Length: 189
Image 1 (spheres, rainbow, N blue to C red):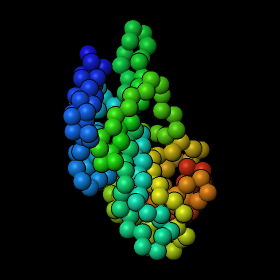
Image 2 (tube, rainbow, N blue to C red):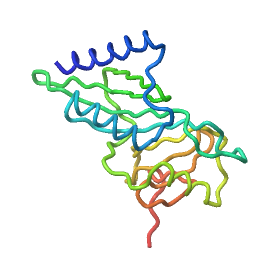
Image 3 (spheres, rainbow, N blue to C red):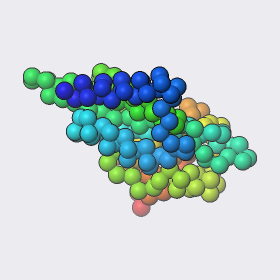
């Protein structure tokens, strides 16, 4: 039944898009609003879910002299599961905003991150911490909010950068570092 409801919602969005060319939800993208709206969307269709990641693409490169942190797109990633006999049907749901909304549902597991349930810093607060830190900014337009799987437990992180260089902003404490806390042993006090 849940799959039918999701398909009906997606088909109505496609039909509306066919008539209007695009399904425009808003003119500006707000990270926290997309997370909240997408959590509600997934909850209404599936009930229980895990939120794993929020990927943000900026309008400009982080190391550009006039980078404002404005957002070009946001994608939220969730995992849901339904009991089927003695097993489970597991799906990963990608909900993109650019600012139009796109939903993609794939069978399988999300295995790169731990589920997130609490984030204290907003994207704007994390971006502000990045800008104020005395640390080189990566040549990238990417930021991802995630709680990465690694040998050391850590809080969710706003990770600004790419495969060559990253800056980590702790989404709970606001600490800024060039070292991945999921792979850096905690310092003894």
